[in-house]
Image (spheres, helix red, strand yellow):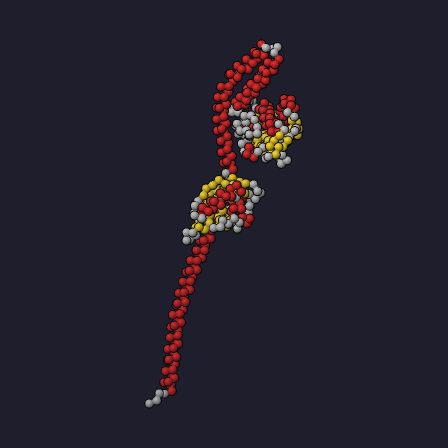
Length: 420
């Protein structure tokens, strides 16, 4: 019996409906899968955002700590190039971060320390730390003494990846250290001076007294009188040397007063005029007539001026100095005195037209008993000057003039009683 058309149509519709239901079921499964994937992606995205936020917080904290440090901090890559610069480093080096980024650290090391830096950088590749006292270059070409701490860092595989460099300026520390060494040396010198004076003064006075008796006893023997005078002068020179040794470390017991520097310079030169003339040394004065006074004693300031003059005379008298293998003549010496005010200090400059000061002597010229091979004497005159000026809270420095000769500069605080 054949199926009715209506039955066949119903069967087709059922099949189609079943097909649609199956498709909907698959869509529902796919939708659930997509929803799960979206939810998983959303979780990953939230984790990523939290991670990025944590990383940003960490970066801000790192940057804050990096820049808050008073010391200089630099980060170098494995080739020694600067990849990060702290604000402390900008201040120490006198440069902007932009000026330093991408450049090699070696560009900022003083030439005197370049070989040491190369040697240490080789050690960094072996993950060796380094602590060194070095000099670094500022933008203006000057050098700064720093204590440098370098620590290599590694990548995730433990391989060398760069260096953390921390610099601390130690200029003030070095100055204090030098002052301490100088104080200890002066203390030892004072003890030695007292011992020398005790051993020499008594017999020296006896010899001088004996010479005086012989001069009176043999007054008619002109030749003997001449020789005795020469001996008397020689022993008097020894007596002055002993006195200088005692002055080197003698505590100040002077009554302080307001001192007119220009007057002391003129009076001291008047006393030394005969000796300067004998040694063919001229002097020139460039004195500030509006110069305020300083607090001190005329006697000690005169002693400083006298020692500075004697030092200049020693440098330029004798008419010949050795410059390498060449003899340079200075037939007539000239010493120039300048006084002027700089801020709250009175400045005294004593310059000469001699050969100048050897570089190896500049660092030690104020040390007790230090004297160059080309000079005679005990080497205490400038050390006495340094002691007096330091007692007055002033400074004394030596340098070579650009056109030749030496310049010694004394700076002393203006006396409060002198007014502004």
